[in-house]
Length: 513
Image 1 (cartoon, rainbow, N blue to C red):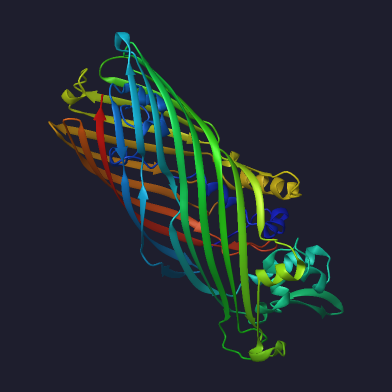
Image 2 (cartoon, rainbow, N blue to C red; image 1 turned 90 degrees about the horizontal axis):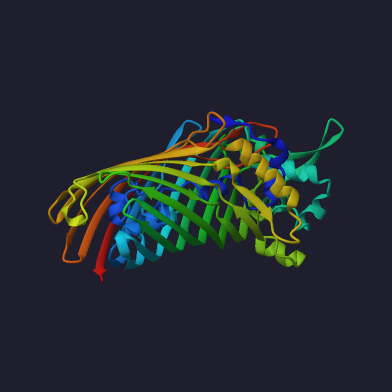
């Protein structure tokens, strides 16, 4: 059985809000998206320059421009997920999505002695959240109902008080309403019980569908000096649009019709939207005509986000209740109407980690005229302070302690991560061939949690008379984990997910004086 213990002081409060430690990871642990050329060389754009994607990696790279440019980069991606949960294997269906890589304008003003000033305005899908996960297995160790029993027991409220209290999570209020959990006197002591535990063995399944992404608008400024130094910075405005639909089902695996539990199903619809602000600064030094060395720093992104959560639950407790068909259902809309509140909405701030980037490039037959160059090899090494992601309550929200606990868990749950990207290009007159690879390390501090991202990339390009067309394909192998529920008094079960992704990107560009 795959299980792990998390900090118990946080696990009760986490049911009060939609944010989880994984939300910090979702907003930061992503492969850079870009033009077909950048994607074909593994995203290694920290020191190469002369490419609009540089504004998102190392803005100094746009200082290599000598002419303006218009670029558009449509793309098409697909993904399929395979999961292992409690010894059982499952697969999610293949899905496909259309997206947009780096697109925009570059404006250039050449100066004296090879100096130039460059302004870049671009838009890019910097994170893609689209995925589909499904896993199932048989569990004789724990039930998802226990998380609701823990919250209710800690609240000190009566059943009727808890059902009517908007400060109690939807899940716990629904579990009480449908008799998924209840109070009982055991050996003269009043206790909170979770009815699925009466079954002893449970079939569990979870389906999670995620959509959306982060689209970032960037305004960059770069300058070159004497053909050796290139300095630049950019202001980024990321726009977040994320949705997650989950359907968790738990049923009696014994087939016994008289143990007070048949099945329960809990559905949640969660969305998060907002915007942020970040700054990227960088420099590139060219000590000789063949070598380029780049250094860049990405500030944290300061996000303001608004979440919406709705849910519904249906539970069949067999002969435990006198409900028709032994089945009771409830929705978050019904609870909100009964209390005159909207407990499924929250506004908060989130600060993403810092990023530090060191890069080097070797250019074959470097000349003033890029058309005479014969290719290059380039590599990036990036470090990210993943465990420094930070949530803050919005003004007058009253959730300060919750976010303080959440930040403590993030610091203990994650660790700093690194990424290594390597790519190269060979040029044959007007045609180019490219290959690359990118690796992103495990962000989890605790064993046996493990995750990583590996991307194999390649592509071709054509450049002639101020027009260029690039084509890239990216094959991704992503490993991560997913928790169907969290408990404070038991180790937590989780699934190991392996996702295979494919992305086809086309970039069309036009040079202008």
